[in-house]
Image (cartoon, rainbow, N blue to C red; front, side, top):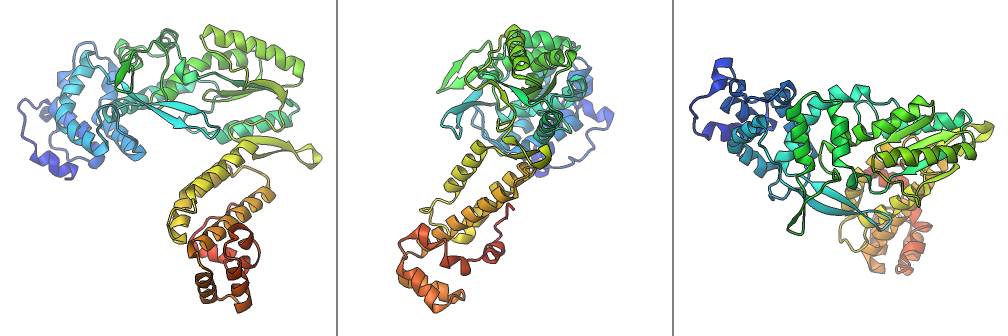
Length: 463
């Protein structure tokens, strides 16, 4: 059922305060309006509860909530602890939003716990995510849209993570410029389980200096205190802002901006993206001093540096946001894909092209396209054409081996290769060694399953 149709079938409620302000006569701008459009018609600004300030009111405006819902819907995402997906939450909000809005304005709203999800990392470890309910994601996104324009302009220019108009590419470009200028020693700081160890009291203290409204601060504190559902058991937390909610990146930037400003005050060259920070200096001795000082700064925030992953070392070859730096002729500093990122790329391709998947080559290529295009876009700054060509060759080699595996028998290979225009002797030699998937797919088969053939299938080229 569409949203507009569902709203027309809902019973009329008395006391529609929005009528006086012309809200009742508006048609929903789109299906994304869902709960927010019903909200404003059901309660309206005339029923504001004492204690709600202009920031919370701005958060709950019809237009802001519509934009927030559009973003939440576009991001998709899994259900929270209530088990409701996007569409199910949409139907819930049609009837429950007026009550939720009143609770928000009265300061009585209590978010549900986030659902704990462990995401495997390429190195075998796991990252903990906390998935809020769709309703809580909507409220957090609406709050973010109001708070970010207020808070973000005061952040350090050296901070690039999760900020409008900034990206990881900007951080990598800054790092390259620092090294090109002669600062070839990096203080690479990795914070141990940062999002799990954010101290709530310290964070709220820093937020009070930036947000002049008690109602909003109370709502943020409620989200921090919501707890996490682990195996059906709610775990209370006095620290941590689990990754997975729209507000988490902004809260992280608020906390870490204190360290950014301290580094700025001493004139250091650095780049930070979320909890990844690199400081560039001219000597190892200077780097050791900076590292010792950073331990104290982070200690004041009750954060710990992961000593095993942090280091003071040469900036060349050190991974930063998936990239590494190298020195070309003329001492020009360039970017390349870090070795670990390359290994992760091949591991992911192997997963996506499992030879036992039972899919046609067209289906395999279509399954690869989103990952390849996204990977190419992110690592497009890499200045290593030879590496790109080698990856393309490796990928096509693997796909040719998969095609042989799918044909299975030598007679099928012979017939299919002839139908594709192969010479009889080539088809015979390939079919005669049909069980040697990898070796057989790297030589003669190249003349039949050509680069142009993969282009026609829609396989993106990296080079």
